[in-house]
Image (cartoon, rainbow, N blue to C red; front, side):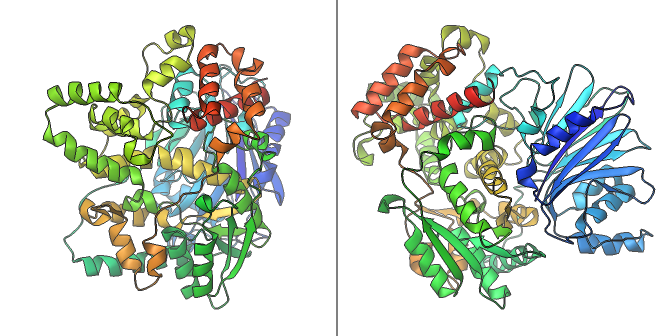
Length: 630
């Protein structure tokens, strides 16, 4: 994998600051430790850090066409490059390397902006075309690879793989976007296209941005979306066979590499399916790795070992220190923006373990979004059935009152913790789903923020992120809609961000076969009833894998990849979280109500309420303030 950066003068062809470009590119050295490269001429500068994966000698970047009129900096892998190369050769193009990079440059020459519609892979790229006086930015369909950009008051457009690259530009003002703060404390991350800083954007998945010098900078243009269009009627047996075939083909496509390749193996359905396909395709043992925790509530390593034994993989397990506190401050540097998914810690460690053996690892990410595997999908379907029983005019007052009166009992068994469900039932479908995925409720966020900060929001609420995506959804089926919303928000904003930054911190490339866009489109067209059947999420996926994986792997309870932060904040991290949450870095922002922060701490540490997610989010925000904004 690689890191990319660039500067483009949108107004004139003035010389660019070469030193700034080098600092932007240098900040991404962890993404590409093998080499760096630069292309600079008046009005444009492109930088590249390389992690060599395919054609180790021939894929040096930025890559220029034969005439020297097109230059590209590119992060990612396009797996169907060989087929495109044959098509381009037939059209008269000549090739001098075996790299996918050269194919992409010729694809731009032949097809222009439409070239991305032919790419199958994960990518973020910047192409400068001297003849057109243009800069073309593009990001892959699912958002596997990141791309940040900002148009500055001086007319320069700067872009990079991570926010830290843009922060090297001295012209960029570091001003927090209040709407992004509201989003962050609702979702635990800042959803695309917003970033934590005003004027800085993430290019959304499946979008391009084509900027022509001397013209106003346009908005991004979408070239792909998840279809969710019903496919042809087929028997379940046929669907199961097709799933097995498509997973195998997707894995096969992602095993192309000139460096050591392996896989993450958690012992869950998705990673086990990927490893099974790899084992069937490889003559030698698949290199797999997993991590274990001392606490059995968080430990999946025994299940991973079952799969490793079945497929005779070259498996390595490392036990993670449950008190891995030294990593907390380092996480802020990896993610740049506030990022509150605590599973980033074990993800970082499993990437570290994998990098000792391989340069490329395949993961099982995407299975839950494709096949409705998350528990919240099951709860949403249940709540939708209840909502249909009562008209909104009656449901809102009845469940709203019940939700207000029912005590918040985080300490009680799950069956007695009905307050959140009652509150969700009082809302409409979209607001109910937002309630289920929110880290803090609207009432809690209102108490968290100071009066001045609440006024700066001007009535904005984070649910508007989902509402905007819902307006453009190709489906109104209740289950398919919330899957679509997760494809637009949770998948790129949380899951793929987590894996990209954790893997790139170790110069490890991670490929995700279950997010092949042709596979995603096909699965989206399957009926909701074969994805979620009764209480069984991923129903048809599991049925398809019954001939391949042990029953206990397919039908065991889902565990997730969690760490015991709630316990930490009452014990070994009690003083640390207090000094952060009530410390000067957060207080000086003026964003928070310090009395509410103090109350949250006291309630959590006394065991009265579980505020672990909110406290973790505040701890990460404190680190962001100290490391990025200071």
